[in-house]
Image (tube, rainbow, N blue to C red; front, side):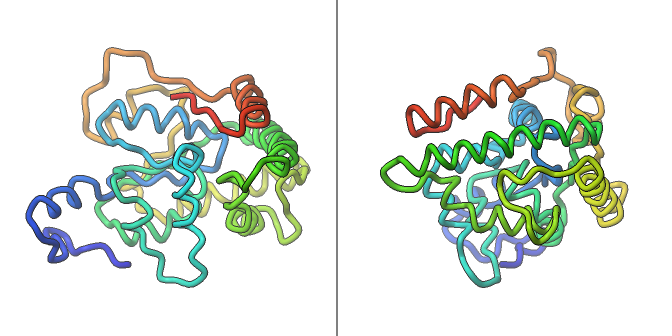
Length: 247
């Protein structure tokens, strides 16, 4: 679905609905791969007034959201998927950065990055835990949200990592780093420089706030979702059937 033209409300009625739509249209689009600081950036965006921020954790905590992604044919109704959200981070949303940049031409784009080797180690650990998680959800009564998302996540992964990729596939150093670099180059080439921030969460508030045109908070920049937390979260999922969030 195309976004309303600038300065228009798309004919929505009553007026209160128009105000809601304008307030919650996407203003920030995340383009980073998982394990690049997307969880910390979500928390930072929400603290800066660009929330709620749509992240994979939203699907864990709102299982019905998974169904919004499972429509077989385009066009995708982005307004339905992101209803009530002002920003995005992480898969599945970040995979569609091109489409979202077109659908929301006034939104800014943030590409979260980190050292490619460190990213590969963290992403590989996440995939191994994801494989273990599959065994856990298979024992539950009914599919977990992440299991319902498997077809789409598999398509996304194969786009980045090759046609044989599956959740749990171990990427070689060469293939993993090359995939990371291809993605970074694609986003950098595909988004105008004045609309794009290449952001490492270790840089903290300053570049993010300058890019978004907001004051720097007094509070420390949030650093969430490290490997230890991920391990505990997957253990909680297997034991209780629910994925906790770090927020």
